[in-house]
Image (cartoon, rainbow, N blue to C red; front, side):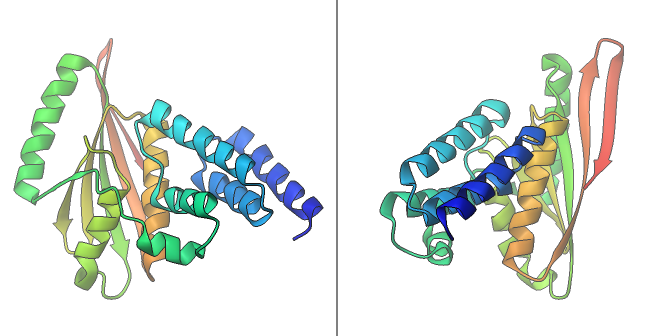
Length: 212
């Protein structure tokens, strides 16, 4: 691509980010365009801006794809697919069986009542042939997308349950979008995500249900 093409692509992505600053795919796109053009300092700045925003706003580490791109920027060598395959997933979330997950959620609900911090319960439904045969793989993908304080469980053969502490609606949507993109990239599997934000307001308990 020419210098003008790269600058125009970056400009379009940044204009879109003004409307939705949490679109991780747009941050990746900007980094990729800048990397292809050899503008490594700008690509590095974009990565750190994105990483700081995710940490400050949602307590999330940069995604697997973003870290792979950053590795490419630093080393300016392997292909994107190789970098993604070689990069270790963060595996931050605590993975547990369903019974323990239900117990943890019960504790989190009680803690929410004391701290007045929101708790988001999320259910990831996997749609496609052979989903149950690769359940462990999808569980690992979800775990690598989350924080150390989050909890996940294989709810049944085609569903993964998630408990996100201290996460409001915007954060839930960012996490859901990250999970959906990661799973759909990994195979011929479609994803449906339902979540409920539990929080205590001045007038009492409130629950907000949404789907993605």
